[in-house]
Length: 452
Image 1 (tube, rainbow, N blue to C red):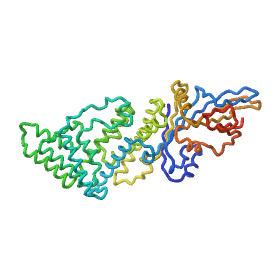
Image 2: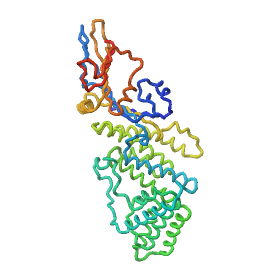
Image 3: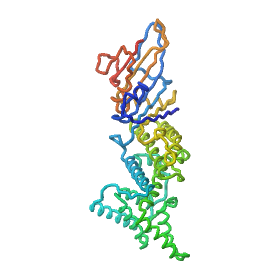
C-alpha cells in the first residue's frame, strides 16, 4: 500500500489552487471549507460486441484500485474538533508563548490581571498543594494501556507526576506574578516538609530536580554539607520566584509534552520509537521542540479525521498514513532547525507548518478481501456516491472495455461533490435519485455516463 502526503497553504485564492489541477482536492476554497475524506475506486469491465450495457450501480471488481483521499484542515478551524486534542493545542500554544518570552528575557503578561483572578488562582494553587500533601504517590506505569485506551478520545495520561500536574494548572496563569506565586507555594511546602510529592525518575527538568533533591535531604539522616545544599536549593527557588519564574515552567512543559506525544504515538502503537524520537530530541532548543510538537499534533489530527469520517477503516491503513506523514515531516526538520538559528534567514514556506492544509492519498491494496469488505461497508453507510462509466479501447461495433469510477463521499459531501465535478467532461447522461431512471439505486445521488 502506498501513501502520498502533500502540503498546501491557505492562500485565500481558490482560483489559484484550481488552476493547478481541476480534479484535485486542493482546488477547494481553503478559506471557507472543512476537512473531509473521499474514497475513490477505478476498475474496468469487458463489453460484449454488439452492445454496451452499463451496470447501474456497477459492482466493484476485486481488482479495483481504491484511493482514500483526505483533506485535513488545522483542528482549530473545525467546528466539531476533538476536545482532548484542543487541550493539547492550547498547551503547545501556551508553551510557545512562554518560550518566546523566556528566550527574549522579557516579562510575560497574557491578559490584564484582576483582583478576582488573582484570588481565584491563588486558591487553586493552595488547593492543589493541599491535595498533593494528602495524596498517595501515583503509579509509574506507562505504555501498558491497550490501543483503545490510549487513543479512545485521546485520553489524558493518568501517570503525570507532581511537576507535570502543576504545569497543567499554571498554564492558566496570566502573568509572571502568578507563576512566582506557584513556585513560592511549592517552596513553602518543601521547607515545612509537608509536601512530599511523587516525581518520576525520568523527569529531568530543573524544577523536578530541585524537588527531588529537597525530598532526598528531608529523608536523609546525615548529609555532608547539608546546610550548604539547603541554601543552594533555597537560592534556586528564590531566583525563580524573584527573577525567572518562566524558567522552570518552560522546561517542565517541554518534558510533559514530550511524554504526551510518546504516549499517543508509541503507547498507542501509531508509530515506532525510531519514527518519533527525532521529534522529541532533548538536545534541541526549546523553540525547535515546540515546532516539532506542532507537526506531531497535525499528524494526530489526521488520525482523528480518519476515525471520525471513516470509522470502519482498517487500522493498519490509518497507521500507514501516520507513518507517511511522520516521514514527510521528518524530512523537513533540518529546515526547521535552520529557521530557529538567528544567523540563518530561512524562508518558512520551504517546510511544513501547523497551519498548512494536508492532503493525503492512501492507495489501498487490490485483491484484498479486507479492502472489499471495508468499501462495501462505506457504500452502505454513507451518502451520496457518484459513479462514472466511460468506454475505453472500443471498436465501431461496441466491443471493448468499460472503465468505471466510483466516488464515495464520507464527509461534507456537498462540498466534495462540487469539487470533483470536472468542467471538461462532456456528459451525455446525468440523472439524480429523483429522476425517472428506474435502474438507479436510491442510495446513489448521481450517475454520469460518458459517451459509449
